[in-house]
Length: 109
Image 1: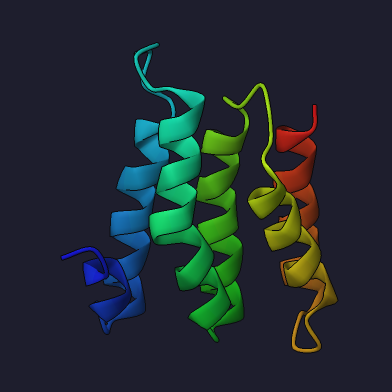
Image 2 (image 1 turned 90 degrees about the horizontal axis):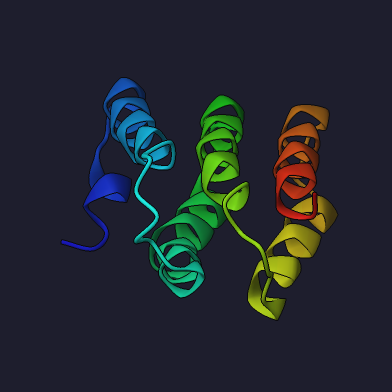
């Protein structure tokens, strides 16, 4: 299902699935459109990151998302709002804010 990654209860299982998603971003294929990447974010990353409470896993999710962000040549408002919301969360720590900033650097290069 669409939310199967978030249903994995063991952190190490989620990390492995996220590693695979991140590895796909390094695929030499040029057939992945900007629109497809942004849909991937909207369908999987945004909600997973916002629902996650484990600081290390949030950082890992953002790290995997960074690989996809580096492939973008344009950015939509939804992604910009996602970054803004993540940085403004009261529960954000220095670790998660740093991960958001690294992802933003790859996005707005």
